[in-house]
Length: 288
Length: 251
Image (tube, rainbow over all chains, first blue to last red; front, side, top):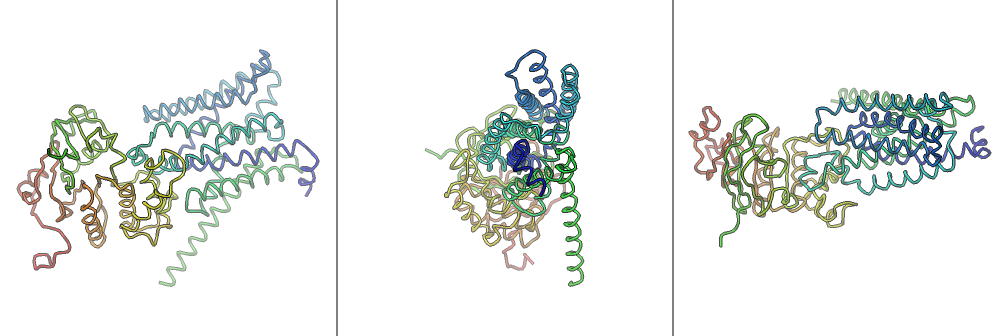
């Protein structure tokens, strides 16, 4: 109740709530593809590269006076660059994919930490990039997030059949005339943009959790891709809102609380699903 | 003027980087034929199929499929793979799976059209899976899964149907059903199937392609035990395996 009252009073909470709901749309749609195409490790690599872009843009903004360069622009550039590099290596030399992802993962973090260390206000910025700070979202951030959200969710839905084709059976999709490499790169770019959006909510380190946990929970309740997608969006909205509400009164970090709520829900649903399955098997054994 | 062959290989060789898998292959298949490709494991059967599909490019020689390059013929080909490389529990319904056969037919992107949905429904009717069209693919039996994949292959109304081991892992009953289905389809499209199961060289088969590094095309009636000994390197006895025969010999 206290949280609901506060939302009515404080703009920063309203912005946080709106950001959480906006990001949930992209997270649910693209997260479903990430899980089905089994590229969550790639999404993790991209997320850690984002720190390099954030750190570099912030440095140029504060130290060099490039005031037009919002750190989010740096994040978008770094994420797309990482997506292209990983995508090309994955297409051209699949056996080296793991090595490249691992290298970019560490390199992105290292570059980010170096830039942040040379930028005034180091500690505060590093913590907000690593663990997110949804309560610090500004009006300009919301506009950028909403624009990216429309692009990502629009492409994800418009190209649903093509993405499902390459996620389910790449060889068959190729026979049918789909440019598999193009759609794979596009999916990585959309993943990169979703990662950037999600970083503003839960930070670089916990991006993967918000991309994958709602999908994992939804998978227990739905048998088709579009239903999983829809349910993932709703669950993401629920987790971000519930996380914000839970964190408000005891003044806990919002990003971490959102992930704990999502993780707890995942564990409970998975355990309950296993228990139900065992009971079902026992019953069918008794009746037979 | 004689009709152009549906598939034409002219002195084609292919290697995966090591020793040649297929060497100096030349053959042609006429429209409307039902052909089986047989040969030992590792003999190059699936490689031959992938060359026809344009998934692999030959090191030398020329391949023509439906009068053009294999890659350009994709929209006029139906393909049923032996195995799916995807997650076996991928959340896809039978209808959604069959609709994938209509990708890039009416539109290159966006949702499926009414024509796509009609074609998918007709394909499901053809393989008698309409009553379970909303079931999740992973929950189907092996025989039902093979028929669903066949429905996906025929959904684009192909001129050429390529099947890789269509009866792999099926029991006798499902194999008979698949046999009947292919018999029906053979009246309206050219069929080429790969099978290591010599028993599945059905009565519909007009030609048998024996693949073991090189290929030789034989009319079905010319297939003898000696020829199969030569291809497989073992002792073979020919048993005609049409399943629906009722004579004393078939018991």
